[in-house]
Amino acid sequence: MMTKAAASGADEVILDLEDAVALSQKESARASLIDTLPHLEFGETLRAWRCNGIQTRWCHRDIVDVVEQVGQHLDVLVVPKVESAGDVHFIDRLLTQAELAADLPVGKIRVEVLIESASGLLAAPGIAKASPRLASLIFGIADYAGDLGMKDFRDAPYATFAHARQSLIVAARAAGICAIDGVTVKFRDLEQVAADAEAGSHMGFDGKWAIHPSHLEPIHRAYTPSRSELERAAALFEAYRRADVEGGVGAIAFGDEMVDAASLRPEWRKLSIGRRVGLIDEEGRLRDPKNETAPENG
Image 1 (cartoon, rainbow, N blue to C red):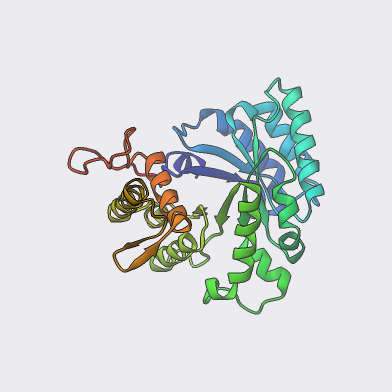
Image 2: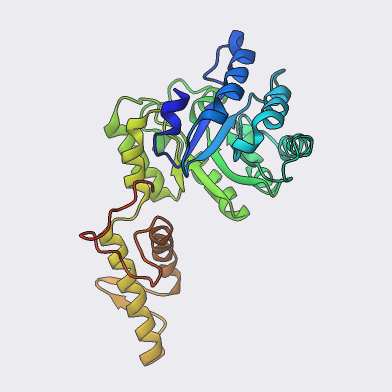
């Protein structure tokens, strides 16, 4: 499974030592990760692992053993069930000690944290700013539902968790880090995966967790601007620029829409993503789909 994941073409692969591992297999799973990781070919995929929560007896060894033995092969630590900025401070210091022991640059390993409880959500603004290592906040839907005592959380997940998701995005944006949406629990329902990915993208998330290779295509599609979206964004920016240069106008009509400076921010985000994934060239032009192969990753 690790070999298949490494070759999947995902933007990031997370090798899990937490919820996917039975209690009796924690140490052997850690040993398997350490033995296997140096032999995996990830290409440009970010390499991550998820430790057990800091409240457990496995967390310390999950971090120290992995970083000291194979830290050079890793980019990111994913920390579950984070409930305070103090949790992040603990992880940051432990990572620093392990990096020093392994002769790795301090700060090499970034941190992504799962918000999975009411306490974690309320503390999210402080958590997001707790360490320069922080790369993202991730919404952990199942544990969050359990913490709230919900009877069921699989139907209408975006209406049910709108407040939690928006609060997480706000905390991440205020800290200048990414907000990542959680998994689609009904993982065999690719229509649901696609619908969830579209909903999360519209809400403002930067990406979404996948738990099966079949999820990658609908997630990448949802989070990568289409050619028509990029063409519209570029045309809007050009119209706004000309209105300013030619008439000193700061608000214009674009089709049936009123556009001012505030309207440009979502369009700038689309163009920024287009450049990052290679849909726009160095001179700001859309690549010709007849002559270019679009990148797989969004």
